[in-house]
Amino acid sequence: MRNERLTVAKLIYMAITSLDGYIEDQDGKFDWSMPDEEVHAFVNDLERPIGTYLYGRRMYEVMVAWETMDIPANESPAQRDFAEIWRAADKVVYSRTLETVSSARTRIERSFDVDAVRRMKAAAERDLAVAGPDLASSAIAAGLVDECHLFVSPIMVGGGKQVLPNNVRWELELLDERRFGNGVVHLRYRTRT
Ligand SMILES: NC(=O)c1ccc[n+]([C@@H]2O[C@H](COP(=O)([O-])OP(=O)(O)OC[C@H]3O[C@@H](n4cnc5c(N)ncnc54)[C@H](OP(=O)(O)O)[C@@H]3O)[C@@H](O)[C@H]2O)c1
Image (cartoon, rainbow, N blue to C red; front, side):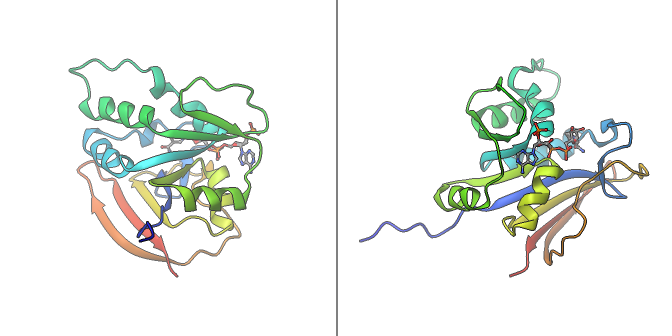
């Protein structure tokens, strides 16, 4: 009997955004988006199944702090849990400039090759996530993203880095939604086929 896989790995775009659609404000700040314990625990459960992160260089430079972050045991169970999830996953960093990486399980790619990512998805045993809106815009435009998870924070920041790209039409189906005590709303969409 042939050993066929019944499910195909998904590529998921997940981001915390302001109500007006920015992941960082005009000063490059995103302190307003920091998840509290409840949101963080929920994010952890979403990210636990992720086998590989595809990072834009800028997002990687923020996230790599989790590789070495020392979180006191009594401080934040959700942060400790996330650090373990992050360290266990593989990472691919897309960059034309980065020379080295400082995390384990990490490699650099010089260009976003759509066919290569398609092959990565086909071969993957676990889901993949793409992070960093600049990089994600290439994946979205190429039709590679299967799910989009937005955590909408109750704030307008008036401008900055858009969470979703311009000039792309993407038809989605709402799969789930959830509200949190701090006013954040999670919206889970999948690509309409
Ligand atoms: N709201 C939140 O929760 C949150 C959380 C963390 C971070 N952030 C913010 O989000 C920012 C990241 O957003 P972003 O959209 O600027 O960055 P991004 O997508 O993470 O990174 C952009 C960089 O990725 C590389 N890249 C993108 N497309 C590529 C391609 N097709 N081929 C090769 N390399 C490619 C380039 O790196 P090179 O320039 O090296 O070539 C590009 O400058 C962070 O800097 C941080 O401020 C927000």
